[in-house]
Image (cartoon, rainbow, N blue to C red; front, side):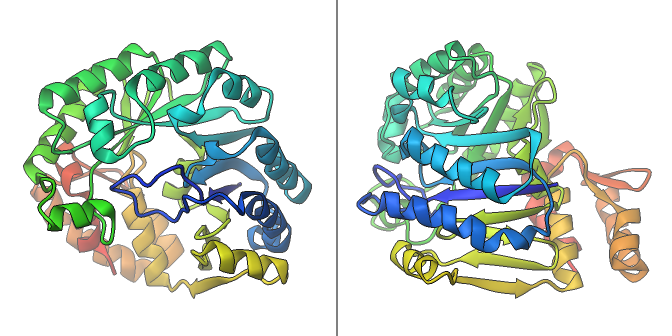
Length: 374
């Protein structure tokens, strides 16, 4: 099985915290869409004829596309790949794009999962983040999506903002729970270099991120969702009724995927590739039938470290027997030596050959993984 990621590099406006590749000018949108469709044909061999189990429209803001443009890209997928019957097809969407008309049109396509960027149900938070929507639009679009028979809906929420008190964070979670959806992704606000937020903080025009606040709100997130039968199956992802995200889970389980579109990444266990993060350069390269991307040939250590990093973030953990069979006994012995100390410190749980993080260790997942890197 394989995944297909489609990067749509357009947004109405720039959220202050975002460092993904996008453009706020849409003058070459149709050309980019056609180029992405062409890239699928040019690079389909990267997946070695594996069937597609998940398709993910990310960005950017994929909901900025017209339904005809979405259909054009899906037609190219089906023309170039073997697509499984039960494929998960996710569209990332902003509430302001999801009008009743747009939702009803999307319901007539093969899109079967919506990932909606709510971030907060409070307008002052949305203004602070420079989001394009208002809280009422967020509530309305979820209600309308359900009426249009979208059963698989996930929402994104952000915590750790200076404007977000603990009381407001609890209210956000309670509002999310009241919507009766089965998947929530929630992320701590991070300050990425060269973003508007980075500039505003350095110029003292807004408060910096408070790490203690973020940690506290992360613990509240786990507690409140856990009491409401949500399973934290990955550090930032919570699901009820086993409604795990198929596409994202494929990343964490080290399955292969192809990324198409400007800045998209690909992985086939032998190499990792990343497309040029420039719309004009991307277009020129595709027009010449010569996709422009960089490639890294993965060493054993690269592959093992990625397995550790992604595996430890999930309920499935890391399998020492898999490490030995896939990477060699010397690596499994080194990891086993290191985890003895982590286990005694209450950071790692061991069940059979499976390593998982303890609840308190989830705050330090990346640090723990890096300590196990080879």
